[in-house]
Amino acid sequence: MTKTINLKELFDNFEYTTMQSYENMSVIGIKSNENYNNIDILPLKKGLQMGLVEIGELENANVNTLNVTNNAITPLLILDGEELIGAKQNRIANATYIIPPKTNMQIKVSCTESGRWNYTTNHFKYSGHFAEANLRKAKAQDVTESLKTNEDIIGSTILLENNPINASFFRKIKT
Image (cartoon, rainbow, N blue to C red; front, side, top):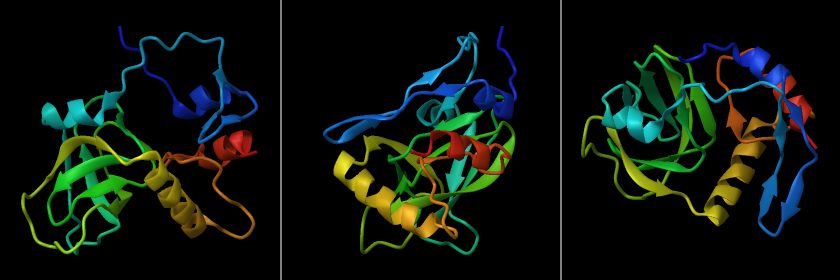
C-alpha cells in the first residue's frame, strides 16, 4: 500500500550529516528512523512514457522556463540536468524538482542547443541523457548567482516549488 506523506513532515524528520567531498563529488547523508520504502514518486521518464506528464513551452515562449503538467496521482521527480528534447529548443532542468500530483507548474531550464527556435514537436520528450558533471557545475553556479537574495544563497540544487518547507530545508543543509 502506498503511504501518503506531508513533505514538510518528511524533511523535518530527517537528520543531515556533514557534507563529504572527494574530487568533483559532494554528498550529504540523510538519516531517518522512518521507513519510506512505500513512497511512490514518479520518475520523469516513466511519467512521459505513460502519458501522465506533459511538458511544453509557455504561451509566450521563454527559453529559460517550461510548463510542466503532472496528471499523475503521485509526485513527479525531475532531476537536475535531465535533458528534454523537442518543442522550440532542447533543454536541461536547472534543478531537481518534486512536482505534486495533479499540478501544473513552471520549471527553470537551460538550453542545450543553439540556433533553433522553432517547433519540432508540440511537447517535450525524454532524451535519456543528463548534462555532464562539468556542465551541471557551471549551470549550478549560474543558477545560484541568479537565485541570490540579500545574503542568502540556496545551498542545494533541490527546488521544491510552491512548498513552505523551502527555507527551513535549505537552512538545515547549508554548509
